[in-house]
Length: 136
Image 1 (spheres, one colour):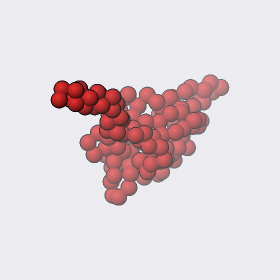
Image 2: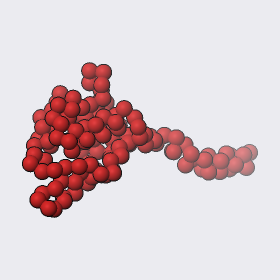
Image 3: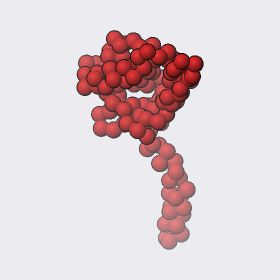
C-alpha cells in the first residue's frame, strides 16, 4: 500500500510544473486590449489628441493630455512597437509593450523605452480603453 502512495506522490511531483503552467496567464498579442494600447501609443507619437483621448478612459484623459504635452515641439516616432496582455489586476487587463518612442530634439534622438511600464486597460462604454500606467 505504501508503494502505491509513493508512486502517486512521484506522479504528482513530476507533473506539478504542468499544473502551474496551466494556471499562469498566457501572453496574448493581438488582443483588443493590446491593440488599444498600440493605438494609444501611435496617437501619442503622431500627436493625435483626439485619438489618444478616444483610446483613454474618462479618468485617464487628463494624464493622456499630460503625456501628449511632453512631446509638443519635438518630432516623435515609434519603433519596434509590440504589445501583449500579460495579466490582470482586478478589473483591469495589464498590457506590456516593447519598442520605443524616439523624440528628436534638434539633431539628437532621445529614446523613451516602452518596456519600463505596464498599461492598465479597462472596458468602458463597451470599448477597451487605457486607464493607467504603472512602473514594472
